[in-house]
Amino acid sequence: MDRDTAWELVEDKISNRNLRKHILAVEAVMRRLAEHFGEDAELWGLTGLLHDLDYEQTSQNPDKHTLITEEWLKDYNVDDIIIRGIKAHAGKVNPESLMEKAIYAVDPTTGLIVAAALMHPTKSLAGLDIKFLLKRFKEKRFAAGARREDILTCKLLGLQLDEFLLLCLEGMRNISDELGL
Image 1 (tube, rainbow, N blue to C red):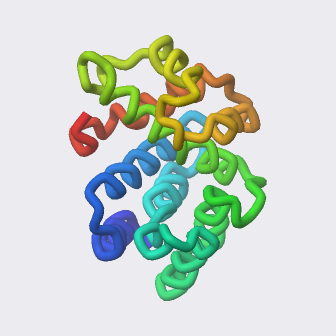
Image 2: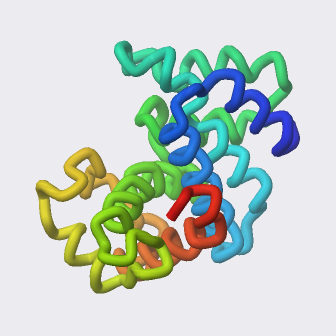
C-alpha cells in the first residue's frame, strides 16, 4: 500500500477532523523517529497513518479497536509488520520491535504536544520548547488522556524523555500547517 492509498482510506473511514489531525501527527512523528533510527520511514509512516483507522467504529467498543482495521487491510495486502504495529499501539500485541515500541509511546505523546501548543501563548508548535513540554508532562491533570506511563516507554527505544519529546516535536513541526499549529 502506498501513502496516497492509505490516506484515501483514512478519508473514507475517518470523518472527525481532529482525529485526522491526530493520525497525521502520529504519521509525522513515526517518520521522524524512523529517520532518527535509520529505519524505513515509509513503513513507519504508514503504520502511523493507519493506526486509528477503525477508531470511529470502535470508540464505544475498545476491545475491537485495531481488529477491524486488520480485517479491512487484508484486502490491501498490507505488510504484517504494519498490522503488528497498529495492534501494538493499542496493546493488542506486546510491543516487541523498535517500531512497535515507538508507536506505543508516540500515540499519547502527540496528544500531549497538541494540548501544550494550544495552551502556549503562541498557540503554535514553533513556540514550544522541551522545558515547557516537560513542565506540562509533570502536571497530571494536564492532557490527562495522554497516558504518562505509555509515553515513558520511550526508554525502551533507548531515548530519555527529553530526547523523545524533541524528536516528536520535530516530526509534528514538519506538518504544522496541516495540523493548524
